[in-house]
Image (cartoon, rainbow, N blue to C red; front, side):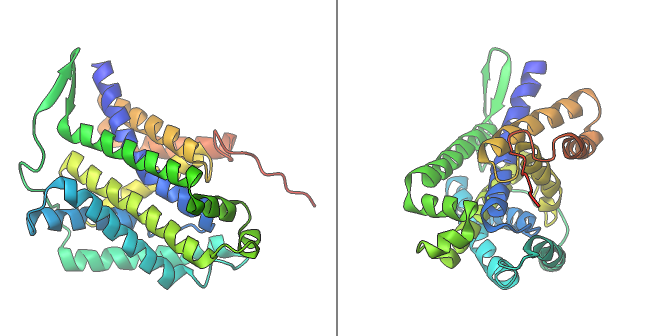
Length: 293
C-alpha cells in the first residue's frame, strides 16, 4: 500500500514539477509575478479537450498542440499586461497587482463562455490497461504523464545549456541590463520565455486533465498555490529545486490523502509554504541574498 502511494505521489509530483518549471522560468528571467500563469494551465487543457472531442485528434497530437496554444496565449497576455511594467523599479509589485485583476477577468470570461461545469475527455482516449509489477499498478495515463514530463524537462534543460537561446536566457536571468548591452534582443527573448513557460503550463493542464479526467475553467487556480509552494521551497528561479520540490509535494499530498484526509491536501501545501518562509525564505536550494548599505 505504501509503495503504491509513493508511486502515485511521484507521478503526481512530476506534473507539479512541470507546472512549476514554467513559473520558475518566468520569475527567474522576467522578474515578474504573473498570476495569469494558472490560466495558461486551464487554457491548454480546454484546447486539448476541443481537439479530442470536436476534431477527433488523439492525445498524442492534442497534448503538444494544447501546450503550444497555451504558449501563444502567454505571449499575448504578457505583451498586453506586462510589457510596460517589466523595467520599472517596482515591477514585481506592479505585475502582481495587474495580473491579479487580469486572471480574475480571464477566468470570468472563460466561465461565461464555456460554463462552470466539469468536462470529461472522450472515453477511450488512452488505454485503460495498467502495468502491474511487484504489486504496483501504473496506468497508461500515469506513464504518459511521466514520459511527457521527462521529455519536456530534458528538452528545457538541453535548451538552457546547449543553445544560444539558452545562453541568452541565462544572461537575462543574471543581469538583464548587461545582457541588452551585449547585443541580446531582450524583447524577443522575453517573449520566447513567456512562450516556453506557457507551453509548460499548458502541457501540465492537459496531463492533469487526463489523469483526473476533469477539466473546468478554475482548475488552474488550485495549481497556483502548489506552484508557489514548489518555487519557494525549491528556491526562486532554481530549476533543479523546482523539480525536486514538485516531486516531494506530490508524494506528501498523496500520503496525506491516503493516511490522513483528502481534504487536507491544500492545508498541507499551505503549511509547507509558511514553514519554509519562516525558516529558510531563500528556499532549500536557493542562495541567500546579502544586501549591503
